[in-house]
Image (cartoon, rainbow, N blue to C red; front, side, top):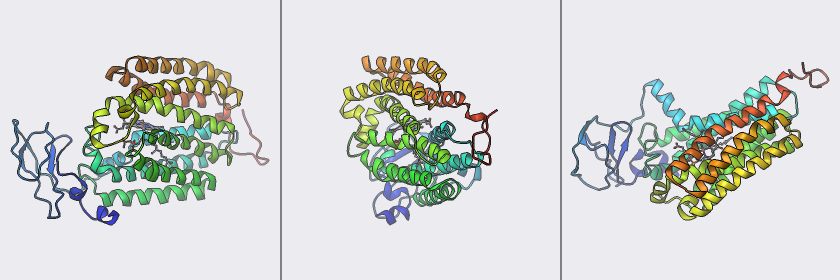
Length: 373
Ligand code: HEM
Ligand SMILES: CC(C)=CCC/C(C)=C/CC/C(C)=C/COP(=O)(O)OP(=O)(O)O
């Protein structure tokens, strides 16, 4: 089946649907064994998802759309953009930032070489993980408004392309981490790649516990950064991981609230759909946990007390938004909580960096003592 997936175009992977792709590409995908019918040309309604097995009479006033051919775009800039989307580049960027913060906070000399190689390796592995994730989820992404324009769903890249990309980036990323950084960091990266693609992704359709597993996936990159710098994992590393672990619950539970129809239609098991009260409680609980963990940071010497003073207002506002979401879960309160989560995490990481004097430490000296200004 996997081989079949690799060597066919989207026709077999997709349920028989007209799937609208940005901005004006529609295509008819035929899941029967016959050769896929020629793409629909001419006039289809862009605001309509239609499922059928034969010619379709479109009820609405149609708009002209170009013919679509299931071949990946050859324009190089477009192609790069497709692979960036396959890697979920904005999510991957923030993942890399968390690994950089883990590196910068670790109690060992700062080395630009391993810092850069760790960031590069983490980014490549995250791109590979997201590529495999999207490869597996094409039939379901095509059923959700949020994801039906994704590159694999729209045929801008083929499944084979995505898996070759994943293979290349994962092998390169692991090589960079193992030979350029250390074995522990490479092992953490490989474990995370397997956890996300082979456990979390299938689990999304089985149990609401997938979110707890996904939060472990997001908590590992700071451990990778710490281990890249220090070669081991101290208490501060686990503190950074705990912050990331807790941050993901308000982040996702808020987002998923507005996506309940999508997740339900596509058959995903999410708290927001099956356990709405738990969804709200867990989001609130973990914003409070973020403040509790932040108070531990200076105690464990992961950072200083200025960090706690500066991060507390951020955490308190996060708690306030989570409480509003808990009190009255709506598209407005959920959107505010999700959007603030995307501000809270980078700001918290910056406060770790700003309050860690380590930036003034240069390369290791001969006796590997830290040399600071
Ligand atoms: C349980 C773990 C997580 C879940 C279930 C989750 C889920 C999601 C989903 C469904 C989206 C919307 C993506 C889209 O519509 O294309 C999203 C957006 C985002 N997530 Fe998460 N996420 C998790 C953890 C993380 C982590 C660990 C990070 C980074 C450290 C992160 C960073 C982002 C960013 C930056 C966006 C905005 C992406 C964009 O606008 O393109 N997420 N998340
Ligand atoms: C080093 C390494 C391997 C890092 C991996 C980092 C990474 C990919 C974190 C993602 C965390 C996560 C669970 C995102 C949601 O995916 P989703 O599938 O629920 O999102 P979707 O519904 O938008 O596809």
